[in-house]
Length: 126
Image (cartoon, rainbow, N blue to C red):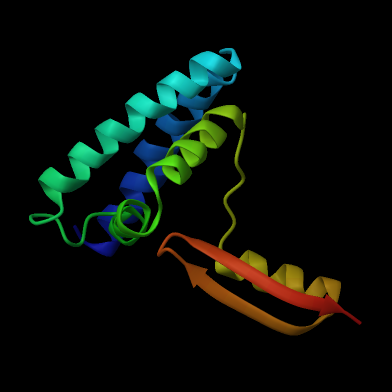
């Protein structure tokens, strides 16, 4: 999948679906979300194992590789639970992140791409 097609898929399809999913799951009680996170992780593992050989450049492919190979199942379940407990997530671009760093006058700034799908920022105030 090309970069523009992947971007379209994430912005126009995946984000709205994930936001709808969050609207529903944030209304569930904690024990139900915990059970659901276990089911979702099993589904993600099956999906990853069955498609990783064929779709190396799948959008979120880097993250799926990291998620399934580097994290323990308990950590993956915790991430799924956390995802279902958060009513909204604000995605920001690297450009927005750079603007924020400039506006806040941060020093010793380090911006790293993390898992192929997010940014991590460290720095200190003047």
